[in-house]
Length: 267
Image (tube, rainbow, N blue to C red; front, side, top):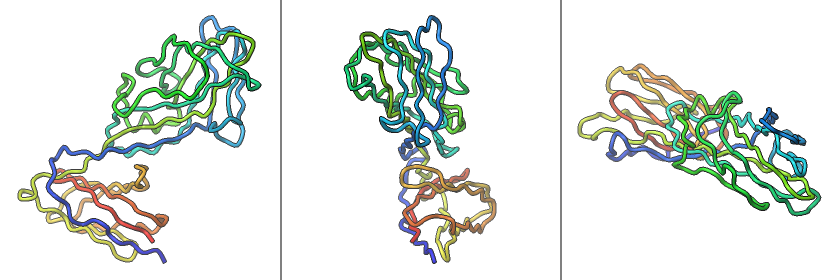
């Protein structure tokens, strides 16, 4: 039988606008080619094992060509609906075909939603040799107004176009997107707001509020992935957590009066 133990019940006074920074990384499970003006070569998409995560799952662009647009999507993100997205990091690996060197120029890299560019381009018209590349960062949203609903969409993803030179083809692989976001963590001054009582018993999480008020409780993993969400409205609420796997989780309580977080353990 799984047992729940509350690991953090004491909540210190925080500023109401305090935030907890988190990130969530994922790899795509679908790829697509779309037209590009003046393209003379296409990507050969090699899809093996269901994901594009290593050198056996990649795309090959013809040598001495201007590529079509290679789009990767279905990252299966699960960002909480109350999160504020602060940045996106994209990483990928480029090498030459048959173990040889590669010479290429990245024409553009961008985020996409429903196969339409969102935000700004990265590495526009930059030349280089092979290697692992990272674009964006924790505070870089690529000039886009990103929302949890957008990045959780199956058609949110990443697009790359490049030009290749020389005698070898160019291989692009090991794609990953990391979404950086924050969740509210603080409450108003403790002397002004009565904090609800939170405790657990028999695989259930209980919340007792001083007054009847609407609120929300998000349950996330330590990695920031949302695993459950509950709406609350009464003085006494009970949430069934029996479906959770063993591990440490974080709850995020929010209402018009207060916000706070705590940890609990499922064994």
